Image (tube, rainbow, N blue to C red; front, top):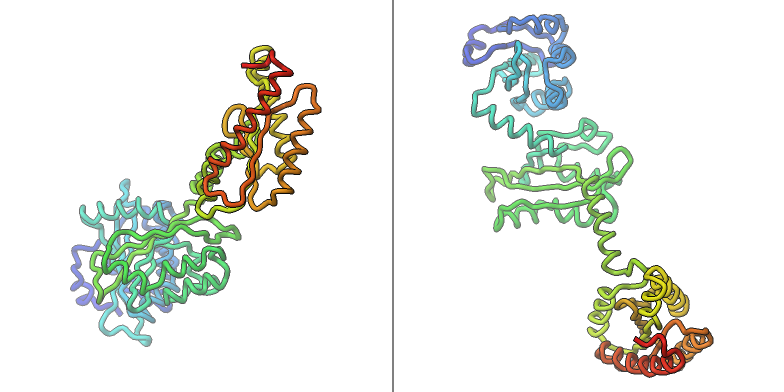
Length: 426
């Protein structure tokens, strides 16, 4: 059964282990074997596929390499690559040999007389050279960062899997030999978050990728949400042209990594930062930053705008005589009153004791009624919480000019307040 001369022709001395294998039945016969104690239990396997599993279960393959090793040595993978595609299988993995961990290359070589009637191939194992080891170590570190690595031929819409979750390679989970059909199935099955589908489809379009890499070979990146175990998680997909990439040979590398935990934390920090930028932390009203943004955005189109300018009465007096805690209570009390009257979304705290209300597209009559009612509600207090002034214009092009009118009227009200409460004058 064994063709010794053929096997010897495969650089016999370069290999530490060689086997003649029937990929259909799994029958095997070692022509050359590694004589070590840890290898002996594995040789009791009835098939080459059981042998590969024993190599793992006896601890001869480091944990980080097990998934890759098992994927490339199981029967279904070998049958598909060799029997259907007539492809030579190569897998690099680390192997414990004696007391050392070494990089090993396993190759499945297809003889010239291979056929369905004669499905025998040659398995060869050899230690990698120093250069290959360095590359493999680097790839191992890279592989740990990404949970999916593909080599994709855009011209033929085909790909080879370098690394992937085993579940992702099952037909019932949408797997296909066609790259576009694979990700199309993923979308149909709801594995890509609905709001991210359009961007995802644009990103993986072969025409777009080829056009981009024609002018720019830098890495392309997309952040999107992908479903894993029933939960959508943020992932990063990166596309890079292969070393041999040309217009006629458009082969790219696809890398996918999970960034959910880091990105979710980043989003939380970003939301917190946005809140602190847009809202005053003491009162919960909009901040000066948000006020400036409103002015800029409104002045792009102009229109009807009403403004109230309010200045809290006696803040310095309260801080000096009762302490800043009571001063803060004075500010928050007025802010609650202002927000309740005009709506929190219309109110801004622009400095320590100064507040502004801005209302778009309100009639003059309605606004004056609201402003006067609010002013009257302050005046019935023994000590009015704030002095206020207001203004309304139907063709406002500058918010600051309208605010200055309201502020001037506020000072008139403040002057009247000091007449009744001279002790609070600054």
